Image (spheres, rainbow, N blue to C red):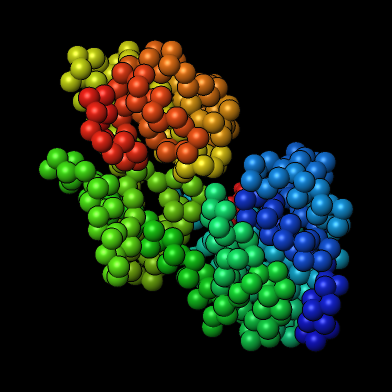
Length: 434
Ligand SMILES: NC(=O)c1ccc[n+]([C@@H]2O[C@H](COP(=O)([O-])OP(=O)(O)OC[C@H]3O[C@@H](n4cnc5c(N)ncnc54)[C@H](O)[C@@H]3O)[C@@H](O)[C@H]2O)c1
């Protein structure tokens, strides 16, 4: 079984099904198609599937021409899980969010795996890519294959290979990002290496699926904790009248032993604010309290409140109350130069400002209309930046430092700027750092 599958993969005759066509699944599907594989994309979102089928992407950086070329090469998006029966390799890239109680929500992984069960057969590889706690592949994927009387490592193969997408980073297209791979058995690793090795420049095997799951969590915990430290440094520096960005820039000149992390108005994106809590939750089942993770979470989630406090104080110092003031938030996306607004602290800042009686608008060249979000609802459109529009607000809150903003224009015409990203290096009468 293994040899036959390896042969198919190597000859590029294997069919690949990617389940979940989001920020992770779509580029991966395109990459496999570009490498000569017949690719089926399965997603429960019928609207998204129809859009992709017409050759239109919904992620700005994957242009439609690339998608259309993949379609010509046989890429087929569908909502029908039966298509998985024909696939030799199935890659699962569905969301892994948190519940309202901030606990892992594996419902999408379980729903996708359940929908796949009737279509699993001998001679297939299944690889989970969704970020999750150690043990998920063993506990959720392997038993479902066994339900079909498949023998993992013998006639069926199971891997975990975490995605490492960095939205907006043009230096690292999908194939250039080294990929970690863990298998349920050595044979699973061999098949997984063959599949990913055909599309990704470097694949690094580790000893188990649990190790691979933990690698991804360490990467994200590492960022969350260091950003938490940078945010704490910002609060300390602020009290002491020191510019934290200048401190970090200077420290980063040390050629060894220091890696710069930057403070901000809070954490955003799909990974850093969420994934560490998968590990904290699982660690509790082992009697371990993940203190660094919880502390970083506490500091990072308190940042929007801190920023709004600074903004209110800056207005007050100018004889203006926050209640009734007009605020323009610059940047809705969670980080610079992307259109991704998931978990964006800008939305949280807007909620806090409105709760304190301010009137809020936003401007973001990458986000024309306030997006559909799980926790926030505003009926707003991006305000174009002009001398007149800028001067009409009591305060401009710089939340995301897109390159497309004209910072000189903002400096010239805004009455007050609250800069959470350290964009304005020189002191100015109308700039307050927060
Ligand atoms: N976005 C990133 O930069 C990034 C980076 C590394 C890892 N990840 C991880 O990758 C996983 C996927 O994230 P994403 O950013 O691609 O999510 P996403 O929300 O962009 O896309 C997920 C897709 O899965 C579909 N889906 C949901 N439930 C489904 C089901 N039961 N069956 C089939 N399709 C289903 C959705 O309709 C959506 O199209 C998550 O675990 C995430 O933590 C994301």
